[in-house]
Picture 1 (cartoon, rainbow, N blue to C red):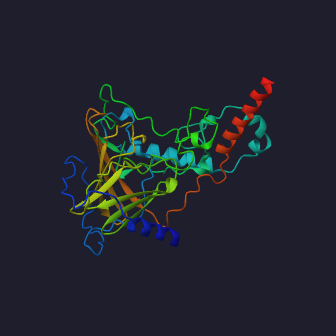
Picture 2 (cartoon, helix red, strand yellow):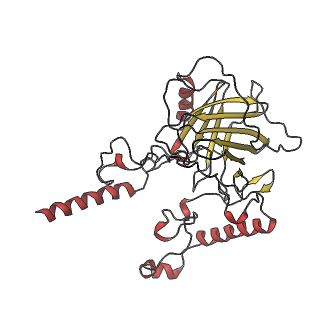
Picture 3 (cartoon, helix red, strand yellow):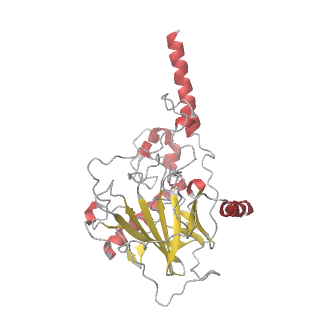
Length: 363
């Protein structure tokens, strides 16, 4: 823990290259989702008078970013739909957490040859497509509530809860699937040719743009000072640093995760991020995508999170929505990405075996 605090101190104390002088901020987009503050609630405040957002939080839920089409423009679930969804989750968890049956223990070789049709990884995948069994996953068991209402999606606009249509001819950023050492050889030639997520270097996911829950590790630690706001993501131990009351950097550098600046609008922290790395896949957006986020404490254990994405070169209209973080007791733990994981080793050793077969066949 001491090492982590030292890391935060180092980050905050580092010199960042940016345009000098305080920023003259525009207001956050007016049609961003508004928070519903609990009646009579007064947030704790830091020494400079702003709401204290620090702590460990989670956005784990069974609600997806985009709305399933069957709900149309309906944002809120009925009580019956909510009971069915969460009831099925409870039943699935009970099945997946049950002791292995004697039949399976005694006949596992024969049973293992049959197709696996159960959702054992809690992601919708089954059988060979399921990379993890239920023991390793923790996507959340409850539907996301916002101001007490169960949601059908995190996106609230456009009205159908889905990303808008793409502009004709808009290019898609492929993302950094390969990397600096890629020279056109097979993807089993060396580790550097594998995707960055596989190599535990970077994953464009939970931290954004638009922070969303994933299959596991949906915990975040917020660290707040007068000059910085840090978002420490449990997944891939990623850190996003927001520079408060500054302008966007003007040195031409486009870092992974973009350049984030922040300011306060009343009791809401507003964060604006742009200038993403050109190889970063930003939910299909282009290099000039801009993300605006707003964090507001609305109850002792809840933070309202609103997001707004605009990229006229990619989408026909802006899109956005909201959800609520819930407080977590405990700490964000180190993400041991490759501990006990033999996938990359097996890919590379399989490649060497294939090389040997070719060599032998050529003799």
